[in-house]
Length: 292
Ligand SMILES: Cc1cc2nc3c(=O)[nH]c(=O)nc-3n(C[C@H](O)[C@H](O)[C@H](O)COP(=O)(O)OP(=O)(O)OC[C@H]3O[C@@H](n4cnc5c(N)ncnc54)[C@H](O)[C@@H]3O)c2cc1C
Image (cartoon, rainbow, N blue to C red; front, side, top):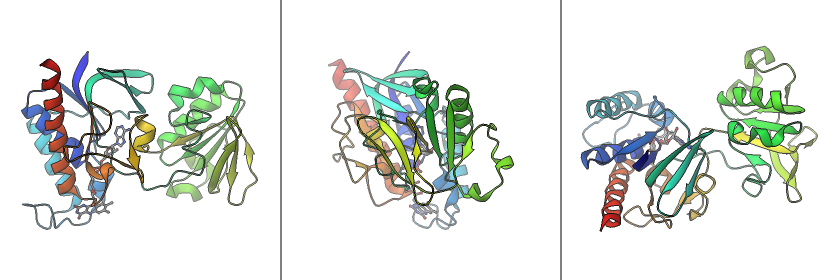
């Protein structure tokens, strides 16, 4: 099955792209999560979304949900780990699963946590974002999992079954909690310290910390909600971690479009929704041009 459009992200940008793709009768898939976007839920009060004065983020989320449900749009609750341009289509990887689409809209928002020094340099050379995809490379080796969310716990547990040693570095607020509440296999060593850099020659060999001694490791998995666009789509032009786009939301890769916070400031719902629409219409135009 090859989709016309794959939309990555279920915030204002991705949802607006989906609504417009649906109106234009395209065969599309929307990746994200049922809660739509954690940033939507977090806003205490939104005063600048036209037509919805003094609405809470939670209420705006409910309105967005109702809108897509009314149009029979569903969200595929999956995280996309990588997108590869294959010439006339794109291959999207989610763990071991692969999806194909003729065009892609990147609407992944912004990840505010800065990459650790060495994270981008060693991506694919010992640094990974997906334990299911790359775990087998570390059979009988040692790895560290830097976990920004609870999903990282199950990734660390899976890796501990394969590797000779797995370290877990929790980066979420429960860092102060007891080991028992972290639901980790007993052979995993927890390091409660700030990772500062990843080093190595050609491949990763050490993870360094603010206070703790450096760890000798063969791999470092960084598990967070979103990856930088450059890491998600190899070859994508970015500046200051934002995707470079023209006014039609086209990126440097033909058939790949981007919208919302991931293309730059201002970070706002209404701008994201507007850009999502432009990206969808540009994708439609691109699909039409392929037929001519
Ligand atoms: C506390 C707070 C208050 C705010 N208040 C306002 C306000 O009052 N007014 C205003 O205009 N803006 C406000 N904003 C900004 C607003 O939240 C953002 O501009 C808006 O959410 C951006 O929408 P987006 O679709 O680009 O990205 P996001 O809302 O960040 O959505 C991106 C989605 O993509 C998903 N995703 C990311 N990577 C992947 C992947 N690899 N695979 C699958 N899914 C993925 C994420 O899980 C998320 O669901 C506020 C933000 C915060 C944090």
